[in-house]
Image 1 (cartoon, one colour):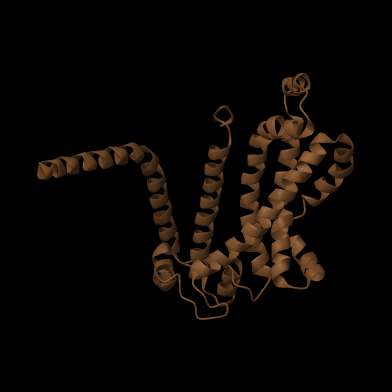
Image 2 (cartoon, rainbow, N blue to C red):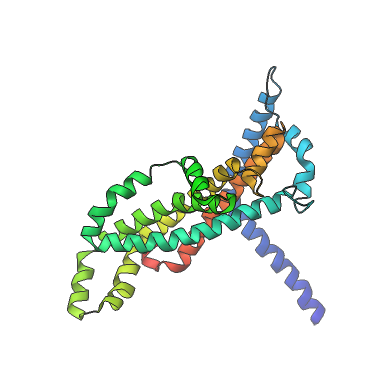
Length: 279
């Protein structure tokens, strides 16, 4: 009896796996074809006379050690790509978390207080247009150390979409919600937890998703300029100075993959927190 049950369970598992795979094929095939076409075109261009960038085949041949041994650590800044990316992600996590706390708090403040909004909006609009690289010399001059300067560059870059989207979300709370709050005579704490935050959550998450991409871009820019620190940005700059173009291309691929995963992670968190009618 046990043998029969085991034999019958195997086809069921196989059929379920095949059915799931068949459902995913329409989603996987188009991007796979597009990537394959891109790699072929890139390889063909690399074979043209006078081409300076290596093709995908050459990139893999030049960087196979970095691809298959990402965990090596020889001390100092001579580390594998896993440790380089991890160091950058740690900086992003610290500064992004701080930017989220400050940005959401200030956004709620200026969204609920018209006087504060009129007073601070010109300053915010001025500062948010400054590119991340422009903050690097200021942060280095003020903080005197590479690590805190890099953290500041990420923070000042990521805070603006969070702040602005939060403020917009607070100002866009439907008047019916406010009327219900008045009828129920909710105190400030109850209004904040039951009306303001739930209504503004879609806008807040929009700002958070934009900010995570900007934070990842900012750390790359900061690390390229700030020499001598472990991170994927400095890895790119160091590889360029050593004329290791294949390593630069490989690092760019990893940067894109990590950026995509960060956005997907934030989208997944959004689906967990937002109410069903707001998704």
